[in-house]
Length: 134
Image (cartoon, rainbow, N blue to C red; front, side):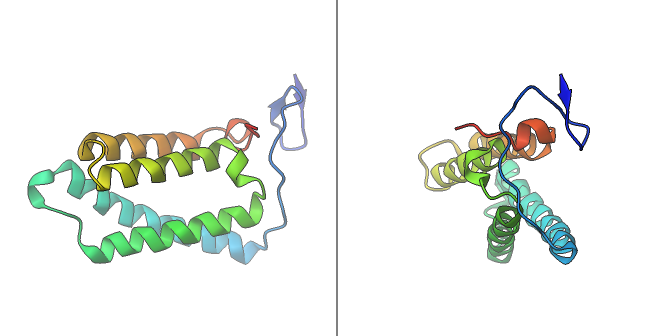
């Protein structure tokens, strides 16, 4: 196995192109991610504990806006985001959430599965997370 400058093992694995990201954008993305996790935690809680009703609209708005912002900030750095595992899992998660929210799939199970998928996609090792799938 060959090792690149970052210490990642690779056997001619095609990785997505990356662009320059100023340090302030990195700090901003960390803040956005923290806000997104709070909103997502509240959102998930309301679906897991169905007896308490729907998530409050401010949290739905918070998780939506922070999710879009996070996607844009990540796309600044990872120019082929949509072709990588992390981007594909994000889009699948969005489709699953939409199908569950509109009643095409069982809400609780689908939303939980979407969160698990998103967690795996965003915490997989860099070599897998940013590998080009197509």
